[in-house]
Amino acid sequence: MTITRETIKQDLDRLSDEQLRAVADFIAFLKFRDQRDRVNLNATQLAALATEFAAEDRTLAEAGMDDYVEMLVQEDQP
Image 1 (tube, one colour):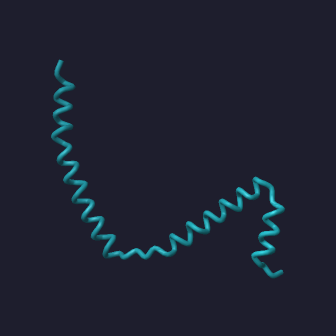
Image 2: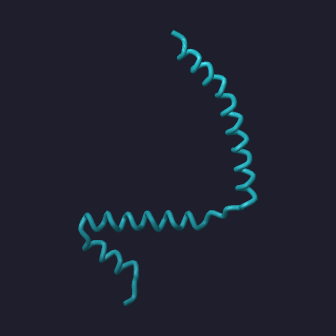
């Protein structure tokens, strides 16, 4: 059987609303998979980003520690 756009359109016209939702979900999946497959991840760039974000996370955590200690001290006070 040859699959053409026209035969698919005819088949779609015969589907129930629930079946159309399933087809729409599958189409969304196909689009997502296509976009995912187009992404080219560079291992060197990913490693650099991980290092950069780790340093930034560490800096933010250390900056927040003073506030955290101050809040603990305030909780202990009557």
